[in-house]
Amino acid sequence: MILQLGVEPSWFNTSSMTIKKRPHFIPGASSSSGDLRTYMIDLPPLGDTAVPEMLLKILEPYRKEGCILDDERAKLYASVVNKGCALRFAFAAAMFGESSEALFWLQLPQALKHLMNKLLNKPLSKGHVSEPFLEVDEKAMLSRITSKGKAAEKMGRDVMSQGQLRLMAFDQKELWECANERISWHEILEGEEVIQNRVHELLSVGDLEVAVSLLLSTPPESSYFYLNALRAVALSSTVSRSLHELAVKVVAANMVRADRSLTGIHLLCAVGRYQEACSQLQDAGCWMDASTLAATHLKGSDYARVLRRWAGYVLRTEHNIWRALILYVAAGALKEALAALREAQLPETATMFILACHEIHAEIHASLDVTDDHESSSIKENLLHFPGLDPQSEEVIAAGECFGQYQRKLVHLCLDSPPFYD
Image (cartoon, rainbow, N blue to C red; front, side, top):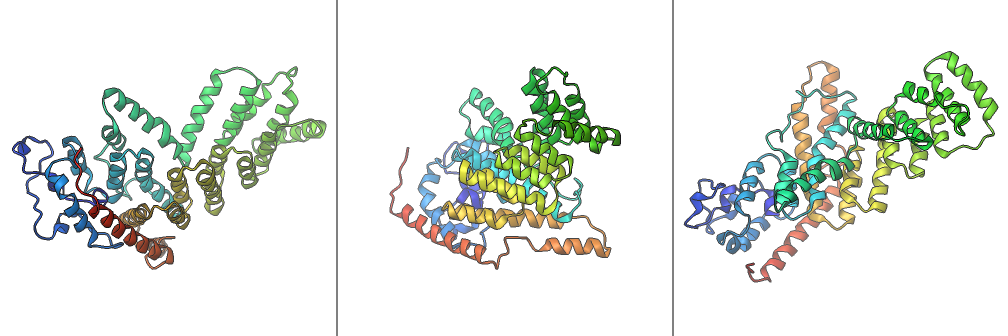
């Protein structure tokens, strides 16, 4: 909690004779006298403000022995402590081995920017919103915190960049990148089933012309010939009138043939029923495909509905709360995200989530570069009130009360336990 809320890096200095040789040393000395809360970067508006000082007193014997953070991690902490609470939360999570939670905190600003872009109904240019973490390589930082050697560092970096972080993709660009990777994999393989998968991926990213071309290349002797022709002609209705006329003839001739479930989804896309297509994909368990299709063709509440349902599935079935939270945030379902944290009995994380969201929202709002015309001023005024996490809402107030109870319980637990040195 001290690392999350933010403590001055000089607090880690000790009276050791070799302190000046330590790379993270920062001028200033810590003392157990006086109000120790002055060493805190900032005190949150939620919870009990007296608790941080009590925790600092409890941690004092450990600090004096230099066993809070080692030199490298203390230096890393000093580099991120003033770069926003989300990055501090990520550091604290990585410090204690919670890599999924750390990735959530790193992805949270991007998810909120995604939500704000949707509320603005137009993309924000790179110059409109500052990037608070440009000086820090977050994934490298996490791998350095969690690794125990060169091999582990490489493995950690690979997992961060290619594994868990990919699972938290939610916007169009990221989902398209994943889909295009899968398309390139299918191109290497051979067989009728591979063609079906390639068509499905091409359709998800909206490349109808290539999908139609691939389907029409099926040889007549293939058992997939009529099935592929049916889909190709139906999809081609958005490409040319002549192909659409051919589609009517093929559909009429082959309507009675057996079909795969994905074909019905493709036909729904051909007539513009993308919301229904996404629902059927989700019913079939194709959650990533549904989100990719939604990101390509749906907007506003229709797109948010797909993400919200996906988040519920990830939370209830996959039991991955961090991935679910990112999807909830991207969908604008901040109340659901807060409810999920409270249901998981994580009162401290719920409070940190509120703090991070408000800090990021304030930064985005302050960085909006809008003119003084009436329309732009109206847009900025609408974004002034953060949707879903109003400080006066019952959910936020209840979360603050639970956090205060959690803090007091934590203090009692610490006071009842004598110092232990490893």
